[in-house]
Image (cartoon, rainbow, N blue to C red; front, top):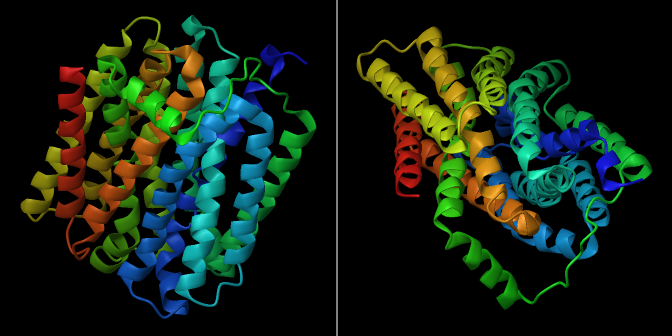
Length: 386
């Protein structure tokens, strides 16, 4: 089987799986906090730990997959992911759950890095933007559907059932990878030392175009995590929603990313990558300003919270695939390293944005709005200077 015959559907499924454990657990946060006798800040740290693991792990998987091949490294990552899920099921306290979440994230980030790199392996330069737009469109279904599924499962069977369901999904996906996924990296390179790896990353970061898309994509891709971490407490405690309704509220918000990514794929052949990225970011900034104005005017309701967040997500859906396509095309021969560096930056920003939004009590939407506004302005400055 040649690299061109690697099934795109499976590559998309692999990449989507990388953040499922992050989003599916969101509606169950309040229930888990009660069961484990911890407070909101303690259980929200499971989101931050997951993001930190996703960030750090991605710096390793890119160079490893460039040297040893995508397939064996992906299989190892999926095994670690599954082990973390199995550890979380009987977790007796917050400490064990945090360890399990760290294992999950370190394994799951292999899906993100290697999935993107494999798509780039089987694509021409001209076709990369279209396929990556398809990939991002599919990936947005994860944060759109996962919270709703998590809300239903946790409401019916308890929060631990969320990890049982996800363990079954990862086990099935790992089996499919072993059975039908071919190796797509046909130009393996020697594994450099830590200094050489750092030098390779610095070489990419020194390129103005790469740096612009890297920062903009990092800001756009994970800024909504700030809302997802706060959502169960803001929607339940302030707006009176049930945990099951929280999952569907999150679905509505993140579905905006699906709409934006579909739009991005349709305009990919007619609008330049830079122009499309800037357009999406403008939508993000305007939506964050609208949410802040609504909150300050005392008009915050479920509808007035969800609508601007939905529009913000549309902007993210336009910005993210164009940022990914832009930075991956800067040096196609370093696709694995570029994907690692992007994933590290994206999840690092996500952890910072989540920490910023959760540092204040979830009694208003102002912390979320200010966090999203800051992300949009940083992305705008990066795209302008790059």
